[in-house]
Length: 435
Image: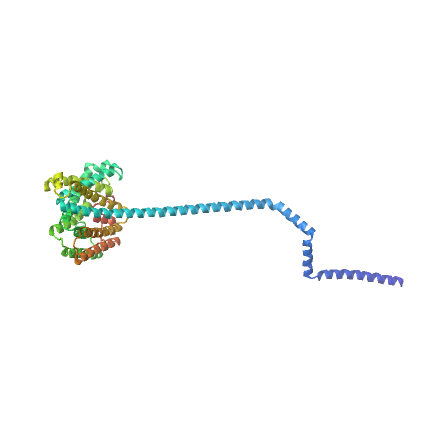
């Protein structure tokens, strides 16, 4: 019995031990999450835990610190390089934009100066030329003086290298023979213009000369076979009608002045046709517009000098000039200014034509004619009736419409192109570079 009791106690104690272990296991399993979090926080806040964490971070840094520093340094260098390149690109782009803007501003300013000079030289030429012709009624000599004044300017420009000097081939016999017919017609056209300016008002002469597009289209059709479009014909109707209306109301009208102005239109436009036919197949020396005009001026001076003496006698002596009523020095000054501005306004016209489109030049030429007419009326105080003013306005409006039609390609079957047609119509010279 003692043995049995002992065995039973032993069994109970074993059972109790096993039960307590099971209870402990179940208690651990059933411990709430909050208690676990609290224990973890207590462990982390303990000095031992902090020391352990810091040791582990230190060891991590010791293992990966070098690699991290290298990567960070590389990243910083890459960012710096990218920033530098971006800044340099921005600087280059901004510099290029500033350069383009400055170039545009310079070009616009240059065009403004050229157009202002073109108009100013025209105004001065027409006013002084009219005064000289009224006091010194010898149009042949006045024409010769203008060409001689141009020769003086040409010599100065070539001597001072203001314009490019022509090559020796330009003055070859063959080349001069080619330019000589143009110089003869050029001389005759300017002579007829001076005759008209001496007989009628400046405003009326320029109103008649507004019919240049009409004769250009007419002769191109008759001799070159260039058929005008209906738009061109419609634009020329107000040109012809306006000139007719202004002629009927012109107080200073006379047939010599009217016929001379019309004759200058015919001569200049027939010269253009001649230029196309004769010089279109030219294989000789190529000249730009300014060089060609300079050569023509030199030849025109040589042509006009003997003709002026034959037709009008010797009128360029001091005694002859003194008969004008002006003091001799004043008369010589006016003659020189007339010749200088005559050459300068045409040369500036060519310079503008090299900078802008032909249509822009044509519009500028139309505005120039308006400015010259208005300035001459104000300066000489010519009587202008409403009918005369209306006719002039209609004619100039037709010229403007014609230039716009030419811009849109309404010029018909023109063989020379817009540049050549406009160049010939306005300047009366052929552009050899287009041939």
